Image (cartoon, rainbow, N blue to C red; front, top):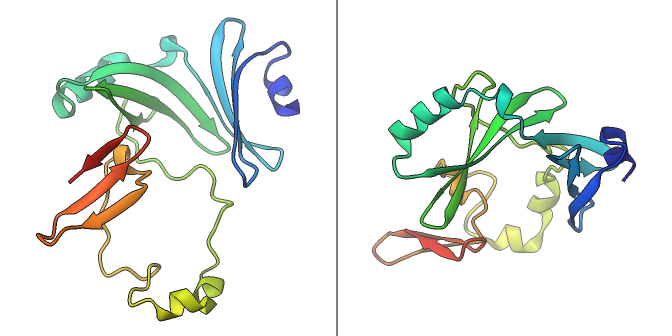
Length: 177
């Protein structure tokens, strides 16, 4: 929590989430403003806050009207990492939430993973007996598909006999085809 107090001397902690691998996410209020930070190994990975004065809402709304007709703008916040600052825009439609990303001047932004310290050791995977017996080599795919942000955390994938791919997004309780 030392990092939280470095960001704000008197925070009102709203929520703390942790994962089994040591990642901590803290949401807090400071001087009436909402902040969120991500921490791993006592290192600040990102900070996020909302300040509508710094956000080019007219440009963002114009882009949303063209590509996301019928979606409602829910939240906009600025995210800062060690080397990048960008805008995270949450939109809603029919109970489904999706995050979109923009540069600080309102252009589309392709986000990269914030926590790049977690890497997979492919050499260790290749030595695993289950991996050796598998017909498919997951780190050497024959096809790659770019999924929408809504499906970045797919918890299950199935292929039907009609070659339709079904994706389960359990955070919202939906199946997509």
